[in-house]
Length: 114
Image (cartoon, rainbow, N blue to C red; front, side, top):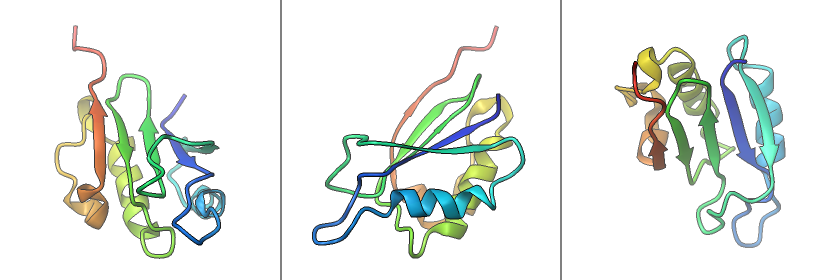
């Protein structure tokens, strides 16, 4: 199973409708082969919508906040590509992900090398 991109479908800025499901749909047609794009309800970052998580077997897990579907599509695609090709499962240089490199909430290390 390849990398999973998980986007909160309930995140919404004050006075706005949730945008996560529509953002996920835009990503689905453009992510690298083998990457799945899913939605989930509430990732507990309601004060900083939209949330995006990255998971894959043998990789670190990443959680991002404040993803703006209106302006971050290209940066999200760059981030997803970095993650899918991360040697050892860790993104070591996130500069190609543009603004999103500053939106990291947390990283959970993957399994230790044997």
